[in-house]
Image (cartoon, rainbow, N blue to C red; front, top):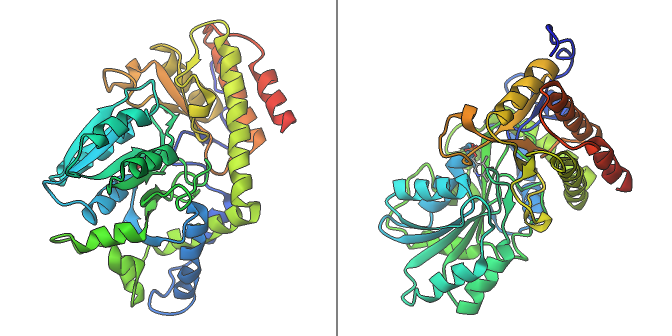
Length: 402
Ligand SMILES: *Cc1c(COP(=O)(O)O)cnc(C)c1O
């Protein structure tokens, strides 16, 4: 290892699964003086943001915006639809499904978890079994994470809709798309999803601090039978504001909105389907590299079936303490920060995680992914960790193939 980190100076690169890299256009849009929040340009700009968000989620449904992170959306959507004492079903494939269930429990909701563990996707048949036993329709909602950022499993949300329809079960279908909106193909209306939640800091390329709840007419209807909804979480005025301050129940997230406007312009200029294709291509480049490294030594992707892999994040096992050593090496020597393993080890001490995660979400290009992979390749060599060769060849071959 070099005594001085010769290659650590230059532009740094946060390659974790959120917050993601912010485009210069987003940063430039945010770099401005405080706007008037009562009339003028800001108010006019927000009118256009709602329909543009709908285009990303592929819905004609309602949109409520909040100042908050992903955890806020978990609480927001449940606060509008499920009362304390009622039941929800949570098929979980990692830390984020379990986290959503925990937020439900905190609201006094009876959250029944079907835990698929860390190494399998949601099996719709097991969800069907549980729902078919629910003759009295006690289960008010099914809470599924589209891409669980801890395990990097992608779940088949449309299959869950088919299960509900086959059983004629009235539960709402809710999808956590924090890690997938603007990354993986997702069709809220075509897949019959009632509630979709997402945040600003992943595929949307804006700093953490804003979040979105998309909801169907059926979910809006569920809101009307609630005994009470906290004023702050209530999505009705946010989705149907009669005055500007109602969008956020108070002061708007002014600078985030300028950033979001720029990000939506970028997404629509590229075309959402091209955004999805780019993420798939870059994910395949990452996977090809990890397969080559793993051909000799302990490295291995957590998700073996490519169809079940999210396109925005890859969880990789390499054995403790190698994962931490590798992350430390790339950060200290290259200015490249890799994601910690999350929810994969029995202890929460990151030093004992045998996993690390690569974020490839949002504002990432082929040369950034090649740079990230090259940095890992250098780290494996510098630390003398066992690994197969040809990873960068494999990745560049994928990118060359388009
Ligand atoms: C990031 C993430 C969250 C939580 O977001 P926070 O902003 O950290 O609260 C929830 N669900 C998924 C799938 C995520 O990737």
